[in-house]
Image (cartoon, rainbow, N blue to C red; front, side):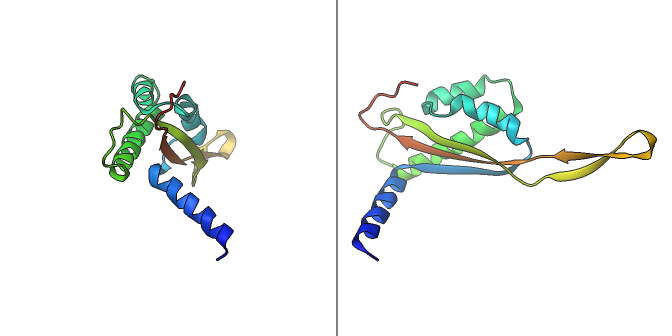
Length: 137
């Protein structure tokens, strides 16, 4: 491996050491409905995001709140000596991707059948911390 590749790989490795990742796979909610809630908390500090998700009146908010708590636990496992409140931990990235669909048939008039597609999604949440900087969210 060349020197430039090696330094880039080391930089990526050091970046991953301070970030925490949590994934939610095959969530039985449509990606469009999940993105509505995910857009509310993207780029927001963790404690504020938890309060937003707690008081959002959508089913997807409960699932994202549980995922955020998992990501916080992952961050605390990677950064054992640091406190969550002092580190300015925020949601750096949240992606909602489509997953597999359950395809069903629904009876329709005159002997026809309408196709029902029950969608599901995958959510990936990445937390990061900015030490010594203020985040205005």
